[in-house]
Image: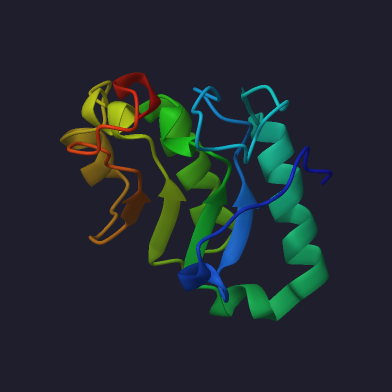
Length: 151
């Protein structure tokens, strides 16, 4: 799969399997961040994600059974609707059945607004145990140099 842009990941994810889910940033206007400048936000389609996982399974074979942690690549995969995220989790479970933790970046406003099926039955029906998501975001409350819209 060709990924449009640079892949950024936290140092803690150095040995984590990287799975592209989005490109660009939903906000892309923060004065302090130039990570995704010039790259429009888009969600990778289910076929694109499945092709990547199929290619991974073909290339790495039995090693895929040892993958327990996945990092969803992109500035803000958590911007996707709960349905879209859960569809991608289903693919991860299909191709990498031993994954226990999925991590990603998330903007705080997308975390706060996540209500479209994210709570309750939809998650429980996926038989996911905590911690299944670690969302990394920037909290800028109390830092007057940053504009609130850049959270």
